[in-house]
Image 1 (spheres, rainbow, N blue to C red):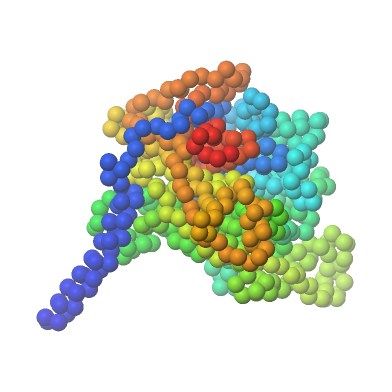
Image 2 (cartoon, helix red, strand yellow):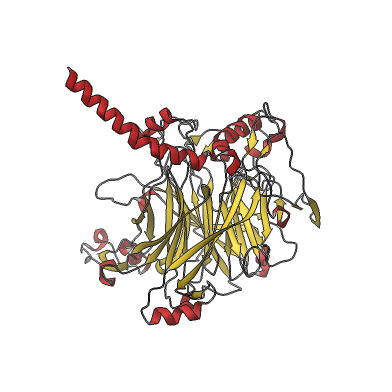
Length: 589
């Protein structure tokens, strides 16, 4: 009898030892000591609040750098329809009408907004979604953009832009990717002010099943970033038979939200961004499936093969979907020949939030990335060329194969971040911009408070308990780098210099330096936001620009280094989005 008791005691002691140190690190990350939290704002007067009817709860923003066209995905029902937290509910009838019903002239509550950032005084405009499939709703999250003409990717005046949008149209089901076309060079349609987005095709769950032979469930794309080197055949629209337009679909990398079927409850209570006590943390370590985490991988969608494959492995804490962004390394100027010479990713685990750089590297030789497989578009190509099917001709067509390439990546560089991060952007010098909050511990209470308050039809600053609930802080950090060898230093913009070094086959150590650029400290919910000052720009449709604003819990960012501007969105902010001028004395431009 004594031996089993002794063994149990030993195992209990070992479990306590093995879990308490991770809990201590977890607590320091999500619930830092009060004296480590900055209670002041930083460069907040550089950030303008951008508002317009319906422009709220905006998950992501993307900028097409050559043309200056930006796109924003917003879903006013986000608090009740959230794949990250496992919530799929109807917006309460008592909530404000703008959260429940489409605005005049729109068929959906959620939407995509276009923004010509090159036009002085321009503000985002909600786009009409033409030919959107009727099945399910429209709940957009991640968004990516590329020139529809893949032969002129860097044209500053493209005829059309291709938008890839992750969307979860049905509750507790895998998300899909909708592909839209925005014509911006046709005067008859309004040019850059064209307010119609043409739906072209939908990539369903069968495109996102990493191992179809093993019948693994499909993953749910969330954040998307384009890979320019591989495209699908030219594809016609799926739901607009009158259109003769065909597009080639680019490949892309993506991160994914948790498996919807893994959520034990559908009210969001199954996910906590931070656990502040050891017993609950130990329970999570013993029963991790009670809080579903995002998949362990970043994925690569091969458009030519119409399939997805895992590309890099990382581990994330529940509620923190990895962020991913491809960077060309500076292109030919810096000695690189791929649009994804590097993948930058941010993930928050149980103990640390980290920025990772994955270099495209042929560890096993280029041949290891080459694949030969059956052409999934063979029948489609036959129909396009009017070749009879086997049923029509009685002749079985020969097997046709394609060659595709799966890039390989190695994680050479990792930098721990000061705070958990929800958003990532990469500028053309390869510097990472990350955004999050210093106090993850406030997040769950804030989202629950906002849900309850808006469900009662009240503004956020007038809810029950507004004086005791705090709106979490927002922190935006820039991570730059230098190459250092002895006393010799090379900066990110010295690309020609680094090309000479790479051409000689010399490996130079890389050093990361992080700097806080913007900060809005935590405030009581009862404190209604007030602008530092008002700009002179406004419009008759209710849009306005006010200074002194950053979204709560930022989830999307886009950076324009040449234009010295950072765009910031927040999926859990009801007040609008931000446009920040980059202060030259804080970040090299």
